[in-house]
Image (cartoon, rainbow, N blue to C red):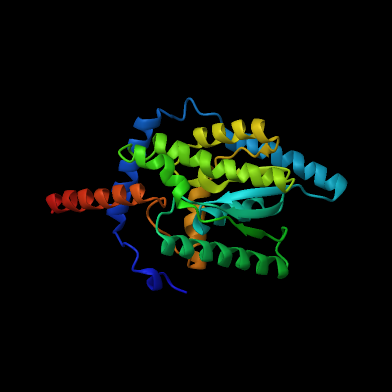
Length: 266
């Protein structure tokens, strides 16, 4: 199945993409106040946990379980490849923020296709454990229950923070029910997502549900770049907005502004 079956994805030049990413990154920093100086190094924290798990695996021959919330196949591509040697992973696809059902279904199917590719690689001798997938209920009404009142909040602000809590809380609930060792999310791979806030939410839910949160900042160590490369390698459907109607509208405004700015330079 191709992206064309679901409408033609927006295509921009390299210059336009660079402008939009820079603009969104600057806006995100202004809204969150998060800088490299005041961030914990979640990547190093993750590496310490993985080193510990590797030692335990050598002794016991077993690996822990991980319920991994995924926002989409492209964002999970690097994360799954990175973690599949350390965990028995179950991907939990739960994203009620995606307001268009057709878009939602497209992303779900791409997620399943990617997992199929990775499991085929294991059958051919690549290291790691088989990956399973659980599709959550499609519940956009739960997103709009709080998001409508925050519709004018810029992307990266309180609306996004409540969306993080909605999706990760559901993940924590399922992780507790399924007696998973850890739960985590692929969302920290995005340069436009506040990794500090995501880990803060995850750590709070760890206290509430008694399931260990796996800290991460998957964009580090070229994680984001590798996800882009893997998406291209496997021909994954990749959209240019997070998923909700508000992020889509903001992206369209940025495209218009970008195109106007480029015209003035000609």
